[in-house]
Image 1 (tube, rainbow, N blue to C red):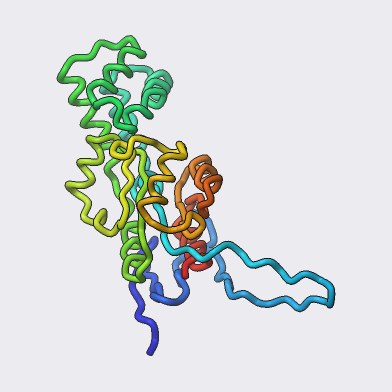
Image 2 (image 1 turned 135 degrees about the vertical axis):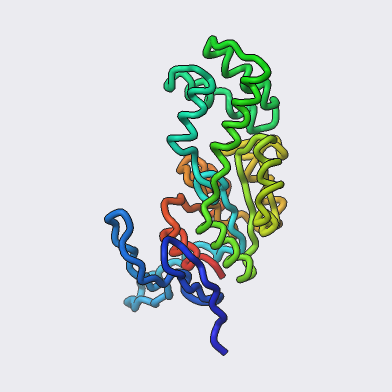
Length: 262
């Protein structure tokens, strides 16, 4: 019996991904001047070796679970338009605004402070007065800026889940945004383990965040593939024994999955 195929839309025509076969077959035209990746043969071709030579060492263990980052992989990063809305709402010069925004973000994502307390700290650093109305507007604009989902990634989650791959999520995310996603994104149910920084009390690239997910997944770290768009987060995962993939495109991720999954 032939393997059942599950249609997956990556960036145009439907892409058929065999449940037990190659992950990416596409005749889609090149996007943004880039050529689509050439098909790769991931079969293990044994090389002949002379007597006395050591055979080629085996590669890493096969992947049994994929641990995804949220923003920059499944959900989109802030758009220029949404960033401009935040800058106008705060009434601050852009460079100073983003310096304050990010320098105070980790405690907010970790759940150490609330949304109002976070924005009070940001505006105090900017010497900008803040009232209750502006606080609400900044929180609303911030949540909106992180709320656009990449449907191609959501479709890939469905393919992986249907294939029987264990899925996990590890995201730096504040409580208000976590609650919004839980209320509006049913695909979160695809994940066996959901590690939200505001709930587990640690953020990437802190080792505790990865260890929490490994423990909850119940698998050896080397059988988990961590996918994140930030190289420093992937490097931290690899230091703890996980396999890692820096997300740059759906095509590159599909190739990594084809190579690594059981």
